[in-house]
Image 1: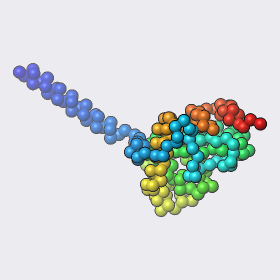
Image 2: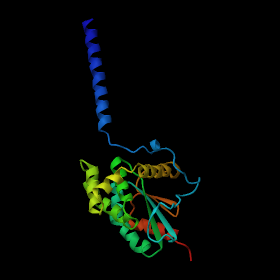
Image 3: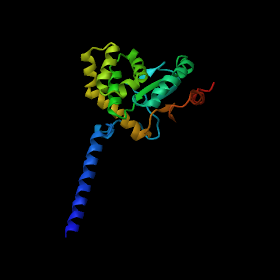
Image 4: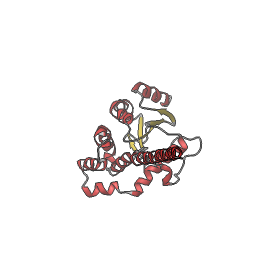
Length: 225
């Protein structure tokens, strides 16, 4: 009887340890955005690529014949690499010459990325991409900070926002829902599940590819004379 009771005691202790461990893991896990919690979004028609909207931020001339749509998370290191290393070459050859335009869409994977997207959304239209560039350039500083919200607030202030404006941006629930709805539509209707993901005139290109790969895809998308 004593042996059986000892076995039961050991088993009970093991169950408690497992439960405590599971609770600890759950409380310490990264905060991942669940887009489904924000409801359904307007979807593109089946078989179509992403559609340009009036709310899109456009880098380059709106009437450029080639459209690059980028889905990125502001905490994604590969997205930062693209912004720093490849995008300047694309801008020089394709965007600044009027041959292509780039539309940037947030696909936040975590809470800091969503907060960063809210800060950028408050920037004046002509400074939006400047804010995005700064957020990518300083990604290691704010994304891994003990308090990302405070770090993003400092960046917003350096960009000309007041404390009140920065806090208002970070608390904008309407914009938050809009950003997450964009992610949901991309995930559900376009199969986007990693960042960065690009669509060049509707054709999907995955990852922060080197410039030569983008150049090839852009040449293929160029109007034939």
